[in-house]
Image (cartoon, rainbow, N blue to C red):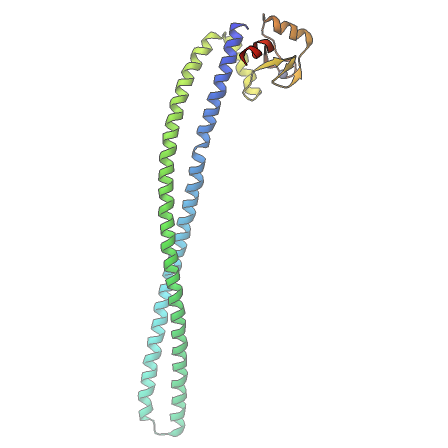
Length: 242
Ligand SMILES: [Zn+2]
């Protein structure tokens, strides 16, 4: 194989590894982003629940006020009862007291129901608070992990880039340009092997004369279908390796 073609094959191998690492680095923060969004949702949920709790508390105070007012009113009516002389008025006042007592009892029932709800909501809020703390801990841990992973990958990438620089020096600049040009248009693969007359880049047959020329290994050929630069995958050599 021509040394510059061999250089390109090695370069392509390396470029593929570099590309894979770059993609991995891009994907790493995705989990963190999803979990951060989840935390924001939880915080919004918490704020809404806390507001609801505040509303319930002021409702409770209002109900307690209503009960106190009714009690006061009942007390006054009872006092007035002592001063009433007329039978009709007396009975009317008794009726009024009975009505107010009924109102008070109903309001007390409402208060108790409200207190139960308040208790349940308080517990739910505390649970949500705990969940938020846990989520924050997960995020902090994940953030650390990702930072460490990114650092590792960056280091690996720097080493590979260095190696890439050395390899690129072996290949003539015109050929490098062609390599980059095809690579950009062929999803990262500019060099393809040919096995039994078939380009493994596009799985189509190259011309019979091309295959003969390719085996001579004197020039760099391109696939007539996908334009990738070709090298011959010598079956004999392959078998020897295996
Ligand atoms: Zn091809």
